[in-house]
Length: 290
Figure (cartoon, rainbow, N blue to C red):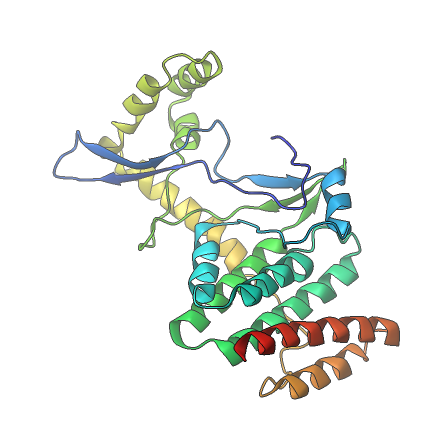
């Protein structure tokens, strides 16, 4: 996989959403297709050059990370009616605190992650309600769980495990046809792969394999079970935060509680640095609501 030389990256799930009509076993509708030789579990990488860029002050806008449609949709829905400066502040805390790809110190990265979760919770408590509040926090907590899968390669590249993508409006997962073909029909997969590499007729082996789905419902069932296992293994690992009990009834109460908690484990310089960042965050939120 090519390493991106940017502080942000786009993770594109290369899969196909296949819906089967049992009454018409020869008909298969491909609702979305992007073809890949990669397995359904993918990693995304940030290079040394990308981290150096992330550490600089030359980037005006926060990085926009895409981990899954579920996370993206929850964030987008919650922020749809918010002023642009508020949306920018939220994506900046995601970039600087939650993902925080440039930080190599595990302890400092964990602290930043917990502070980011507290900031997100404060925003949700004060500025969101109902379904938007629930969707926003679900997305933030799921994002935090994904970030905890962070791995650093021998070359210093950073990677995160990707979430299986759900079919919109359902609990089903999109099927990565090429990965399933590689497992269930290796010979056809090799023909498909060779055609891709030679820019030949890849569609024939690909679609011939898809046409087998109605005769093999166990393939889809097994795929769904495995995808759900991967999803739950990530989602069921919530990130605990030392700031969970902070009083969020007002910005003053919240910042005071965070400050006192920080003082239990950090030096005064670190405390003041983080508190100043929280005050700036609050200033943006309150300024946009005036």
